[in-house]
Length: 209
Length: 160
Image 1 (cartoon, each protein chain N blue to C red):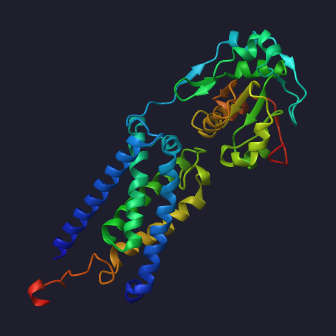
Image 2: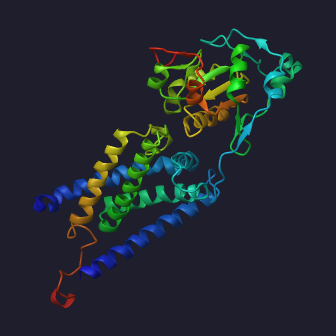
Image 3: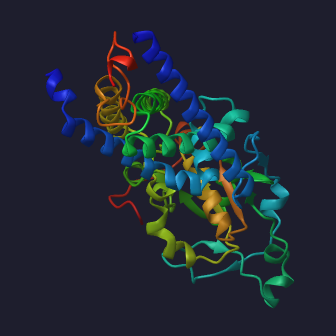
């Protein structure tokens, strides 16, 4: 009888599995957010220096809480510059993440360009971060929504996390891409490489400054 | 101790808690499969190509098992599935922690994102205890599972 009971449990478990798989496939087939059954790995695209460093930029003082040099939004004046009008879509799941290297990050910082966003958690940010970076962790992205809304959509933004294994930076890039930020770059090797290279770090008692 | 574990109120509470938690956990994952797939991929424990199939099937298995548990149907098999899934989740989280991955646990979908850590591990261990309890002490008389099933060594003819 013990065996019969076990057999019955296995049969029922199989029924549950088949029912779940059936419902999942039917839902996926009709859902607007349906996924392809075979997933492709995230595409990372190296960014050429000519894309990052050959732009005319306009100094904007309107970014709340920041002094970054940004590219103006798309309007007639901006269209005169190729920055805004031709700014490529930085991150889409079908086009990939645009990756910047340590050298490119150093050069951008040296030129005072770009808005740096630390995608790690607030306590990790407080222990040390890249100078002038803001902290917007994907885990608390809703709290920062209004802060993000206030940033011009074609601001040059560099997001970083711990290292290429850390998904929080990519998740934040996805989120900001959906908000139509289209000048996003991912410093993929992130904080770990920054510290290992002996670069300057800044500490903060607050997580969101 | 066994009599307490077998008692109807304890079993019902265990069923309702485990079933409800998994129903709630599945809804956002079903609504946003792409986000859950990203969360699964971030663990880097299953091949990239299989991530979407896993991310599509698991939330529905959670929902179906949760609904069946709350309804008192297929308790043993439902709790077995949930226990197996919880074991996989715990192992995956420990693996991520060992590799120092800072990732969203994907436990309750995008609406309640939280980083992998000991708090999430202990939550799942607590739920796993409920799953194991239901697997071994699920109340057969109260649920459809045991309804009409003759005791060991008897046949239906003995129970007119």
